[in-house]
Length: 498
Image (cartoon, rainbow, N blue to C red; front, top):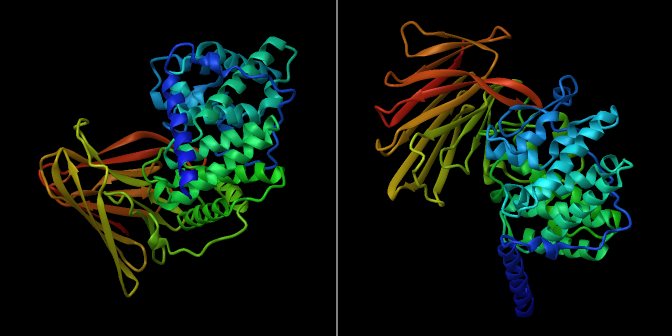
């Protein structure tokens, strides 16, 4: 990039920053007035199956939120947007209107009336730019969903509603266009550009669409996609966004930039390598993972595949005869998942600090090694970071035998200054019975297979059987195992099949 190009880019970035600042000023929305287009058409020639089962909606008229697994009646969505009973994360998800894609939109006229009433409620009540409804990822998701479902939503003789809908769409589109050059997190930038690409193609604005695609190519050239996505779910989301951007480019018979093709291929390769035997992807600390059918559909849109070593990525796959352990080596606490055959045994691990006022350093020194001997695997992960100006060393040692039926783990923190709870997410449909002479318990699966958990004698553990989430597109109950080892800075546990 030459000096002149850098200057232009600097001006554009500050232009976007200026508009983000100005949007907090009263009457800013007046500047977003636009001429209404003659037509709005969804030009995407690609579609994906629902991320999770529509059966969750069809029988009881509910939507299950990804962020918490909470069920919300479709009729109550407008009230939920202003209710104090819902968390900010739940409200953000509802403001994105992604739940529309779950509905069988052609089955009942009442659905159309209900959705239009929620959209109308949103238009009349959420025009303040300081509201959470106007955060960039939320605007992007909402604009995309309204465009995708526009033909269905606008199928009414109510001219006032349709006029209000088009004005709101144009208002959100113009606002996002002004923020195009903002420095954003990787997924936020891509979801913004995905929304702009779909919306600009919907009003046949090819000129500005190509500008948006050019900005994406520059962004992808400078960003490290394999390091920027923080979770496997985020990787899959970004992969889908890029595939849909490609589709809008192809609609205009334009060449897809190499930066997009290469990024799509890399993200698809990571997704393929972190899939469990049940077809789903790793979730680690998430409440949600989509259906294998959805994952297959996204990956089927990727024509090429790069050859990459999983050890060079954020996720490590340790495979034995009957079991597979996935480790997030980009996380300073090295959370893991474990599958025995097609059964997920550990759906995630994480450390919880009871003091919520702790300040963690943004940067951590993370390293790991993997050794194999006679197909037995040893993993050692070490990280250095600071908490409230305290230098902390964390170490995790993991062993899995060649059959995948014996796993041992040891975690140690270089301080006893903080109250820490270790959490392990287990399947929901299990029977628990305590060991008689050891510190641990039997875990009996519905299949009749028994595993035994053992802990060091200082550890104290308890269970929460009411944890709810969506695994492989289906609502499930999880069992949350909490292990308190505050008397020691070291935790040891083992899991064996018997």
